[in-house]
View 1 (cartoon, rainbow, N blue to C red):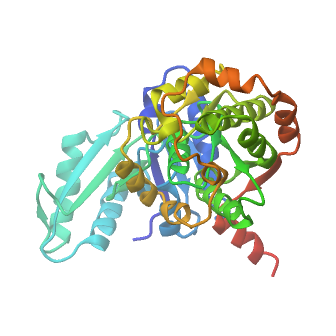
View 2: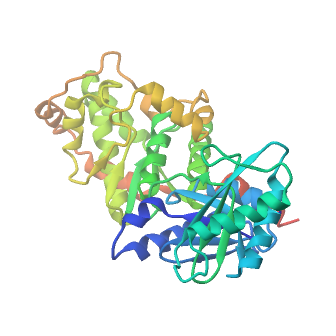
View 3: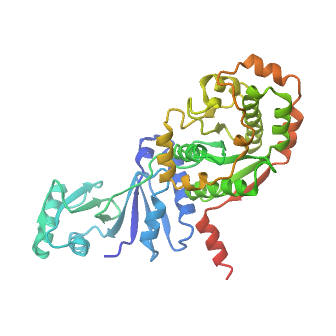
Length: 401
């Protein structure tokens, strides 16, 4: 049986009130971006459901794309049937018969959004169930644990049939919660933090600090590849690459070694905040997990946060490293993060970094040098690139030949 559409269920969006349409519009945009390689599809949406009309496109490939879109609770390949009992009986038979294997069981799960249909839920069960049992030899009923669950949804415009429910990514559509800057290193944590931030509806732009010649072009490629993974969720992502060599060398010369990491983080935060203002973002996201390293103790965060009033979101703050690694594996960033190319966060690590730095002391050390001009130069010299997923780049390449 060939499905002609995919029915999408909203999940958390359904709890929204007057602004529900705003979230639906964002989800529709996400779906269209993700399915751009399929030119024949059509996306239709209503207050309660969204449909992807396949129009001959490969449903299996489209299903794989939909699994990664935030805002989708679940979805089902479906068939649209006229509101006619005979048409419903015929379509139900064709669908179940195409899936049935000897010895399998079934049940029917009817839902009537439109109560004017001539059969109520009990009538649908009796009429369609009886028709299937009469026409498919060996088929049996099991209402508790069936092999095939035929879902029949009666709506005003049509009846929809499906036998499979596929879990979506959940969360909120990307962009529905505003924009934030993601401090993206080449490590394991920050890509996972970006993923979780996007799951809560944030549109993110990545900020990476690059310190040549101490960090190589390979470390830069590593971050671009991590960005490509995140871009798979929304179609593209902006990556701002900050030249950080001069500032890092100055910190090494001007700040006592055990406080150099604290100042480095403060300078990164100040620069990220300046980029945020230019890009009209509302928050900063990073991959900090409480107590994981010296710069992520509560005392360090207290000293570092002083340089900005912008909200700093830490999706990983209570997660164990093993949980973060597991999620990195699931979103396919772990292997990239483990490439042996150092980023600027690791090249000048002091032998004994201060785990409980004092604000007053770091303020005192920084007062001997005016970092502001260097920060402004770094912001002016930022390289911004728009990163797209690997498969879209390949598609664009193939279209040239």
